[in-house]
Length: 129
Length: 507
Image (cartoon, rainbow over all chains, first blue to last red; front, side, top):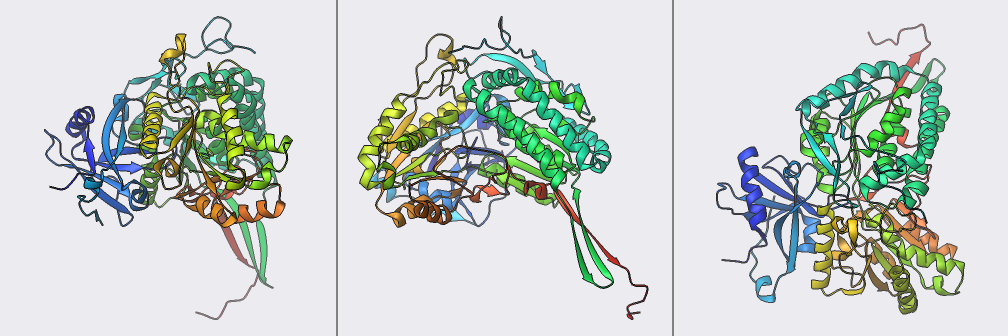
């Protein structure tokens, strides 16, 4: 079993269960840019059209959620991220953008750490469109 | 040093209402859902008002109000519209202090800036576009002896505008002024982090505008912003914010085949060539201030000079002086006129910045100043404060490539001109850049070689009207602050007229 590129915290998983009940299957796209950027955006699955310029880092498999949640990022941005492991976390906040959790008074964010040498040799190949 | 009283406190120049509804069709109307959301001040973390939680029904109502007003507004003369924009400017200017304190409280930025920059710039922006629309001309081309082409600028109709929280009043103004000047009616969706200060302005100017010309629908992005971007009644959408949302808005706009202008952020390089340190004079001092500019507005600016590239020949001296300059920055209560850096706009921004400081340290960048959250005492202890921070590292690190949107600068060195340009352009973004050099040649060549829409040359963070502003690469599409924006908010009508009495001979 190869190393996962992206994981999810308990707090974020709890919110994702709640959001799945309300909105159905979900997806993430990591945003760059200003304001509420440098943060993951959570949408109903398929709402945000991914394409040739995006990569699929992996799926978040969460207890209680049938369909794993795909985590996407633009390929150009991913080049600068590929050496880091990402955990989707949740904090109190008032994000904007169109991310689904914002009305709940929370905001998803990314906590990162560097992959170890061993992990870097063990990463799965990436799928893009 | 003055300390303004917080809105609502004894002696304050402004107070907020306990609750704000939407502004639709010239009056305040409650949200269809009946729901409101709390608005905290990042100065202390305490709630100070509640705001209408808008939904698609409210957006539909606002678009309908705008549609109702748009035929008449679109037919007003440029002179009439200019007169109204000038009156709006005057009204804001007459109430400058009140609006400045209100905005500082909502966003967390120092009141010295809302007083000296944000609100005066907004006043001037309305005046600029009042002038620009008066001076705009169509054109006439004589095609041949019998045929003339007449080109008219016509408004689009109703436009949707979704704005960010970092300069609540100025961002609203940058969008509203050209759209209104061009004869459009607007539905504006303010950011949910800063939903209230716009109403302090709207209450002051409502009587100047025909009902339905400006409509303000508050709410969350997914509940109010999305229905606006998708609304069949709008002829254009304008957005300032982050890249993923920008792409999503473009997708929604494609459903209705409408144009989009986007401003999506940057990772602006601030380049200090060696000759800057040739003399220890006023210019060197100015360049030092330029280095410290990453802290302006708590770093919450799309053009934050968040990468500093310093030529190796002067690296130790310039950076050493820069560190001292940054350590002397005054962080404190935003309503103190001495405060230079205030609070970040929200808890999630605060957490995001700290997570970037953490990854910077993990990647091996060296902290030369700051690097922690700021512990402020008393009523400020619940607010969101981060120390101005200087990292030293290399351009491939994530802190050099991603927008942190906080008072954090990442510093690296370059050897020669080509190295500077290569590093400057090694970014996904292209919004702003700074070039500092005593040599006009170097400054000019660098400015032309950097792939960014705004290159500040021997200055930074100036946003005068009449200087076009916008991005290259992933920083967005379109320009603001310049009369060329009128084109973004108009369409061309060509009347192709024949003065010949004779048939062509086709049929």
